Image (tube, rainbow, N blue to C red; front, side, top):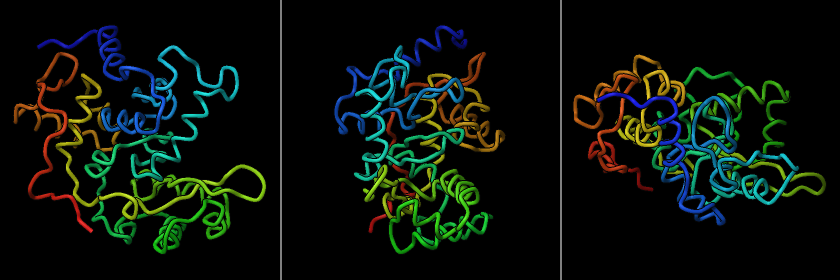
Amino acid sequence: MGGADGSELTGARGERWSPVRLLRSIEEAAAFVDDVGFALLFPAARPIAPSLWEAVAGPDATPFAAGMGSAESLVWDWKDQLPEAGFAWSGRFLHGRASLLSPRLLAALYSGHGEPDDDRAFPLPPEAHEIAEALRAGPLPSSALRSVVGDRGRYGRAIRELQRLLLVTSAGVREQRSGWPVVVLELTCHRFDVGATDLRYATARFLDTMIEATPVELARVYQWPTAAARAALDDHVATGLAVRTSAGYRSSGQPRTPPVPAEHPVRQE
């Protein structure tokens, strides 16, 4: 099977990522994230991915072109409300940009055991472990966590590392006496069911959303080694879940939401 040329693939992705109608409620936003699996808050040239903004404002709208409008306000509010309600993980993940992951994809990608001390298994900066330790007692506003670290730069790097590994999620906002509300952060395992890694599902979701993809694209979005991404795609071909094309790999059209493998049951509290 041949691959699609650039314009065909762009059109197919646009059609795949566009909701039937523009999103107007948080429930519709949650359904959108569940359908695509992963999304940026706002579109970017790289990485190429669905965005919540385009699902709210349309594919031709430019964010903040006229300041903070109604569409910008919806996206900005939902980035905090979606994780607070347990509808989506929120943090900096796709190429370090503000991103949303569906709970099902989050569980498939999360590489820890789903325990509050999962950070201890990773070679993180000391500040990241300090933040995780503080969050074991429950969610905290970012201002309090910055005080724990004591340095804004080291705090920012630590949070980026924790969110790159999906260990920490945004979990709403807290009002302050003055100024803007402050973001609340929480251990991912306290907010979502995780601890049942399912790389086959994660690969299937990526192919379904991206229509056609290369190992490099898969590796960049999920932050996997390229060799591991290629092996995952080749496994899909071997099991009939994908086909090779001249440009990469395509889904063979299997159901979008395969059942959780028996050896990886969803963790019950």
